[in-house]
Image (cartoon, rainbow, N blue to C red):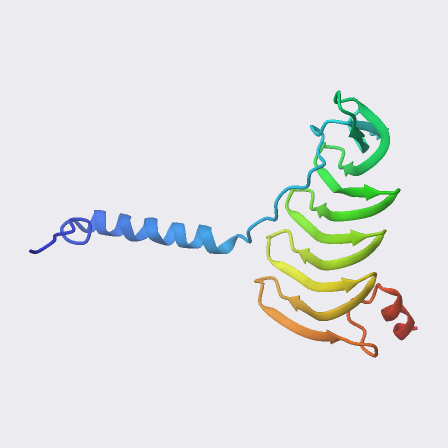
Length: 185
């Protein structure tokens, strides 16, 4: 039995169109870095109360409060979000006992993710990823209770790794934690 695919034979226009479609799909799928999921605190999240406003009354800082059984906000703050004047998120994440806790995000003006990180008890703990506005990584690392550890990698504009450092007791990796600051100065 012979199978005939008309898109591969016959009119060159249809063959070119099919190839163009495949190329468009390939480029679209591979040029954009998959965005991490959006944070749980946005302007629409229940329990949010603006703490600061921009001059045009757009929210600048919004705190989020735990809801009681009836859906009313309690006094317990569980998150915070800061916004650009155009109501686009700038930074947001969870709070526990008044300190940063859980997953936190920062965003470029266009809404793409700039930073993705975790906090425990107000200190970086876990992944720390920085992204360029084109979606490619800029820096990837790891923290252990506020001190950089593990492997830290830097990337160029195209997302190709350019530098890799193992963060140990004598190596400056992130440049921001207490250990790196002490080594730096």
